[in-house]
Image 1: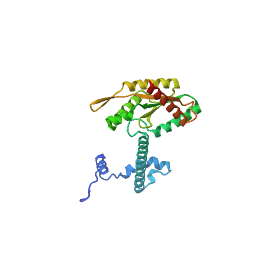
Image 2 (image 1 turned 90 degrees about the vertical axis):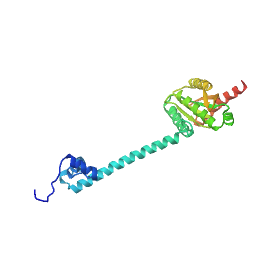
Image 3 (image 1 turned 30 degrees about the vertical axis):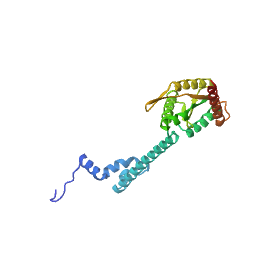
Image 4 (image 1 turned 45 degrees about the vertical axis):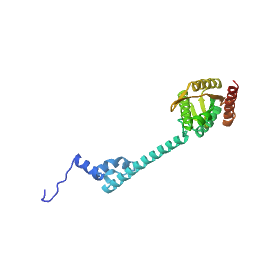
Length: 240
């Protein structure tokens, strides 16, 4: 070795050190990484110059980055869609999601058969709770009822808040008779529910109505039937 000539250090340690500093692979590394892609294009890796190999490596890294950015964008879009379907106050779907799913399920039932039902649940005297105890108490009541409905329905069903104190439950593969039984069960559970708020415990009652999806001409007709049945029960309770 001539005097003044700097010895070339080789081995894994030197390669790792350089990569950590400037992330530039050696021509040998670039050749190995580009062999598969260049052979696909019909260009033998040994015919590529180190500069071309480095350019291919850079391009491949950019493609990977773009793929990663695209996947992140898709996930953000999915998250945004989930938020758009979520009620802003309680942990159930909102009216937008409910109406979309109602239309979809009705179309499926009409085309392929099967059965499904809709249950409307409306809290009794909810305005009094807000007037006497404040809106924070009303929010606590809505949250408790939403959780109760979710806990007492299946994962295949859908629970939504469609109005101030009104909830809807879509019951898959459930005939009208069983939907009415489910409505009665839910009302009994709501009557037993005790909602703690500050130094008080709030008691509730509710009314419910059910309708069959396969018997309705369209989504609006099914909702109107469930609403009619609910207010019919509310009227009976008023005179009991």
